[in-house]
Image 1 (cartoon, one colour):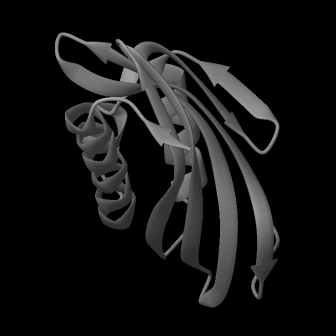
Image 2 (cartoon, rainbow, N blue to C red; image 1 turned 30 degrees about the vertical axis):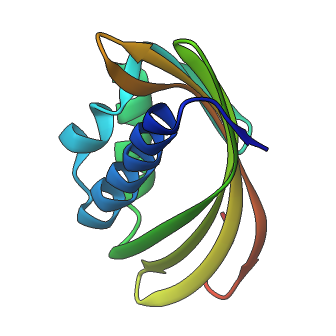
Length: 136
């Protein structure tokens, strides 16, 4: 479930950690910088292509929340050269209009290494379980 050079696997883990931090801070510039220019993001069935479109969708989604705490745990990661794939489990606490919600989800990820930097090339997100607040 985890294979490939440890250095690359660690860099991808730091990519995930940077993602979580940017979500917590609601920082579209830092968050957007984690995606390849031609990346694909599927957010519960809504698919967008290209970094600019991905950031626009994210900004729209994030604007609904007063606060977001976002944590994740890698479930698998396989690195082959300058590409990789894996799964990532998420845990979110979201506050929307004063109403808290807890959600757990799963990302199916693809990565690409460009100029020595690992970036997301594709992320497919689905909610696995949630409670409280408004539904996604």
